Image: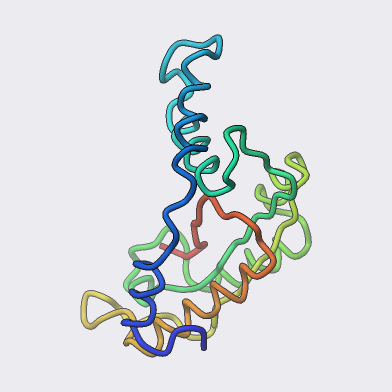
Length: 165
């Protein structure tokens, strides 16, 4: 396990390097001279500055794009609050593997590698309306799965897990 305790995880998050502020400032300044209304690209502008900060270059690049989908089941889905039953999650994972989902087309169009990581599909988390969804050990094991599933990825801009809720 990568993190033995929640304190280890908190320390890792707290101790992340600050990134290259000069690169971020240069990326922001560059946006001001581009032929476009200020803010017209919305969050994309913020993401470009964020990526510049972490890559340490004013004009960030996406040389090797990867998409990681982490699939699992929430315990509350058993109460019928989800659009689909939890069995659909395994079907979706199989569909991803067969290349038949929308994310497959998006990845193909972007020239991105697609990695699908099923997270213990036969064992949903607890129903969080009755108890914590996971205890500390389960949460840390899940974070280890995320880290293992993300290995080899150089930069990660966003995450969204595929759950049945």
